[in-house]
Image 1 (cartoon, rainbow, N blue to C red):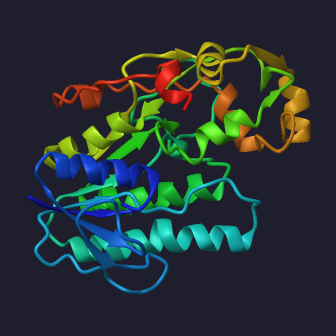
Image 2: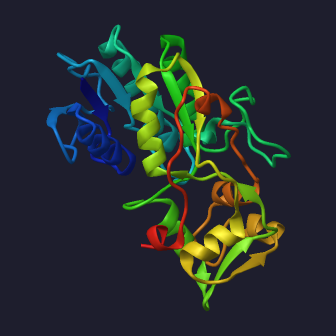
Image 3: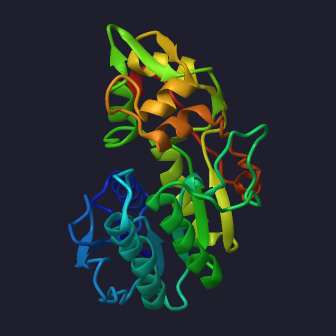
Length: 285
């Protein structure tokens, strides 16, 4: 099989590309920069160009504008250009090929949550340009008939987002987080990568992707960082929009206090299984 992978030069896409190659697939990295393996086809998702999919059997779309920058029209437009406009052009290029479109649990209506979130949970009210534009992009993908994967808080070797942000909460030998402790889902990048390849054969629709265990936030963060967790009152953290420095925006605070647990039953019913989970040794690197 010849698989086109957008975003292969990034954290998640690179893991997918390496796993695809190790599984015997021929990899075509589609994006501005080459991926870690395979052929490179240049494509800038912010332009009006249509990517070249000649000879490709399936498309895995991981290229995205990500992060939590200062809100405003320019931020919204920049995210929309990639996550919506780029998606539209990618789907046009894909034609009749199967498409796996990697979304995010950030599309779900903000919490707090009292139970596990299934794929039919409302997708609305997102508080960031990232959440809003990923939601708009995945609507295009779902209308196309693509498989849409919704991971939460992807972590692992090379993680440029979650772990650096958590490390910035450490002061005086403690990690300072908005309390109280909550349960939550996390997604190992290896589990997301395996789901991306498996999902080529799944029926179209949305699927939650996460590790097969529910973590307690304080225990997980403490184990990974190797320091005890202490709490800052949520009201104080929200008012300041930060915790112990610019480590957490208001959206970041929501992410560690809303208690989002994903129900991954739909993905499990396809036969896919997550095969790894968080351990202090591998995630603290």
